[in-house]
Each structure stands twice: as C-alpha cells, then as structure tokens.
Image (cartoon, rainbow, N blue to C red; front, side, top):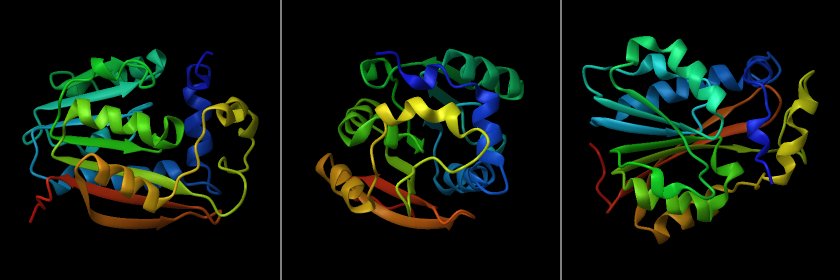
Amino acid sequence: MNNPWKDINLSDYESHMALDSVKQLQAMNQMMKGQLNKYAIQSVMILGIAGGNGLEHIDSKKIKKVYGVDINAEYLATTKERYKKLSSILQCLCVDLNSETEKLPQANLLIANLLIEYIGYECFQKAVKVVNPKYVSCIIQINTDDSFVSDSPYLHVFDGLESVHHNMAEQELQSSMETIGYQLTQTLEHPLPNGKKLVQLDFCRNNIVER
C-alpha cells in the first residue's frame, strides 16, 4: 500500500496547519525553537521534517549536523530549497520508517513532532534504537473529539491518513520509551484554538538529565 503522505501536497498541508482555527504550524515552530536550543548537542535528526518548519532556529555555530527525514521526496526538495543557508550541515534523507529504519544515521538529539501518530510506538522504538540519541523530544497531538484532523477547507486532503493513523496517549509513549532505556525528563502542553492540544515529551537515555 502506498503511504498516503506521499500524495499530500505540501502547500495544502501547511495551509491547513497555519489556519487561525488550527494554528499548529505556528505552535510547532515555537516549540521546535525550544527543542533545538535546550540541549548541548552537535547533531540532530528530525523525523517527518515535511517543509522544514522550525529549521530557522538552528544555531549552526553549535549544531554541526542536521538530518531531515521524510517519506515524501518533494517535501525534502522544498526543505533544501528553503534552507539553503544550512546546506553545509543539512542532509535530507528520504526514508520509509516502516521498512527502512536501518538507513538512519546516529544523532545526539532525535525530534519527532506529529510523527509517531503515523508510524506507531513499535516502529518509533526501532528508529530510536538505530539513531541511538542521548535525547529524544516528541510532540504528539491529544484529541478532544473523534477526529484527529481539524475541520478546515483542506480537510479532505487528509482522507487517506486514517489508514495509517494511531491514537496517542502520553502514558503509553512514556512506557514504550522506558522499555528501550529512556526516562521522561519534561512534559510541556500547548493548547490549540480548536480544543485539541499539543504535548511535548522529552526523554533522556540512561537517566542522564541535562542541567
């Protein structure tokens, strides 16, 4: 089965996410600023990078390597075009995390924002074990109703996602990470205009907490 994310136009996706009634693009941008600047790292991998939202917060004086991973090659091409200033450190990788996790390189920090919903806990565990980061920072969406996609003029663009979507729960994600040796160190919540909320969960390997 072809992954539905390969067929979603980036412009439609970003336009939906930026609507005043959704405001996830704006929220994710600010949350990623915090994710990228919290830890003393030299390399970071961003799973499900899409169009690169948030990459402007990369401090290239501190971070020497950025891996942008996505299943959609067109998204990655746009990311490289948008962030030419990062060309010396940004490497985009077209990888299907459901079947190609072994292609992932290692990195100090692994970021996965609104990504685990579409691959599931087990697949994410495999990716974490391959990348072997010291820190993992995830953002998941908690739904207050039956729909995981907010109502908008672009709603039907996302019709195919139901076939790959997994409902998320903070405790389940925490438990799945503990199973592979990662301890929860921080939880942040960001309410959204439509009643949904984004929850950021940060983890550290071997119980080493950054001070």
